[in-house]
Image 1 (tube, rainbow, N blue to C red):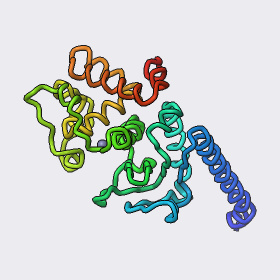
Image 2 (cartoon, protein in one colour):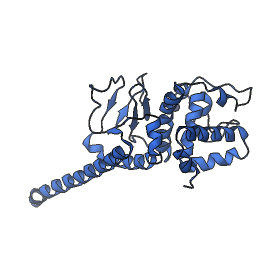
Image 3 (cartoon, helix red, strand yellow):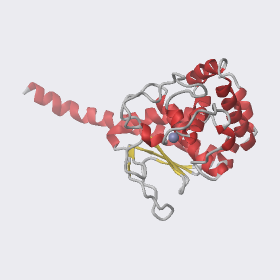
Image 4 (cartoon, rainbow, N blue to C red):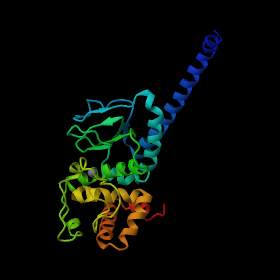
Length: 264
Ligand SMILES: [Zn+2]
């Protein structure tokens, strides 16, 4: 009986406090998102679907349920930090228009992926964490998948077989059969173990486009960048790839120079 009375008296307060907490999280998400949208003049979807009137979306995705908003906010804070590493001019030059932060998204083959670049619609889909990968994985993935869109925008295809980049590899080296082929292998393809001269991990060796996206991503993730710069001291192939990527980015937007030279 006592417990019953206790519940009757306290329950409304508990409900109110949960609601207040939810409202505080919602407000924080909204304000973080609108700051990014205003700064970069992009649109970020997270609580509504991408409208059919603007997009022809062929991928499957789902939005965050209310019960995931704490997780969603944690991810948005991480995303905010990572995305702000890009100069505004750079984002305009590469024509990124939309970001969708979702619970789950599939690639065109129907496989769930942590992030998916939708080049036709200029949408970068990002999944907020469902699984605990290594701490820098989600940061790295934002930059890596975004790079596939940059390549499409600047070089005409995400699968551009850059002939200059290929020259940095030993003549005996041949790439594998693409990023997708690496998912089923029972190896840690992402571990930055510098397994082959010129390559930071095995994933990079799967194709030229993944190699470039990996080098781009590490420039933005400090712990990885420091590790790779150490490898590059004794690996001139890797050193050339890093310099080529930096120069490519400066060519797109000179503001990138300031950022990439900055000690972070
Ligand atoms: Zn990739």
